[in-house]
Image (cartoon, rainbow, N blue to C red; front, top):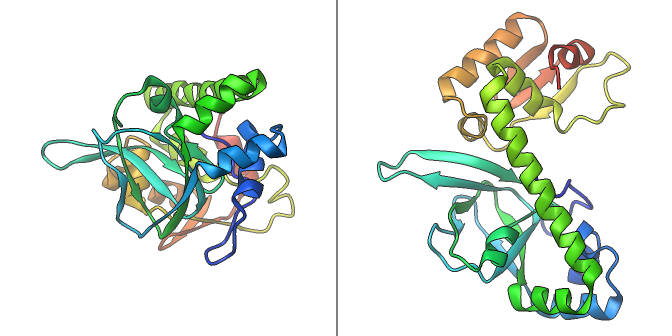
Amino acid sequence: MANQPINIVRKGSPIKVQAFLANLPMFSDMAPADLDRIAAGTTTVHIEKGDNVFRTGDPCVGFHAVVFGQVKLGFISPQGAEKVVEIIRPGQTFGEALMFLEKPYVVTAAALADSMLLHISKANVFESIDRDPGFARRMLSGLSRRLHGLINDVETYSLRSSVERVIGYLLRDIPDDVGQDGKPVEVTLSPGKSVIASRLNMSPEHFSRTLHELTTSGLIEVDGRTIHVLDLPKLRGTYSG
C-alpha cells in the first residue's frame, strides 16, 4: 500500500511544498537544507477530474504525491475495459518503483476528482539517496509497504468472499475508536461504485448485489454514494481480517 493519509490539504488551501513533503514518511527525518533541494525539483500539478496524469508507456522521470483529490491506477485492455489496481488518496504517493527501474509507466493514472499533485524529480531523489543512506532506507520501507499491500490484494482476491472484500473496503477508513457509541457511521464511496468494484476485482453488478446483501442483513443502508453503517461492531465481526 501507499503511505497512510496524513495532513490532508483541502482544495483551494495554500500549500508550502517543504511542509507537505516533510509530513511524508520518506522525507520526515530529512534536514531542512536537503528538503529544500527536494522541493526545488518538485512541481505542482493540477489535474481535472477524468484527465490522465500519465498513460501506459509514458516515461517515468519521478514520482507523485497526492495533495488533494484522488487518482486511480489501472490497466486498459485493447477492447477498452479497465481494471483498477489502486486508488491513491491524499497523503499517498505512487510511481516510486518504476522511477528506480527507469522504465516507462505500466499503468495509466487518471484523476477521480479535481486533484492537486506534487511531482518529485527522479534526479533530486537520486541525489538525496547518495547524500543520505537513511533516506534510502525510508524509500525502501515505502516500497516494501507497497509490495506488502499487493500481496494482501492477491490474498483478498483469491481467498476472501465478495462480502469480506466489500466490508474490508468500508472499514479501511473508519478509526478503531469510532462507532463505540452505537451511532451509525457514514462512509462515502467517492471514487464511484464501478471504480471500487474494479478495485475489488468484482463486476459493478456483483458489487451492487453485495451491498444489497449487507443491507438485507441490517448492517448498512445505501443512499447513493453514501453508506450508513448501522451496526459497526457486527460489521467488524463479520470481517475476519
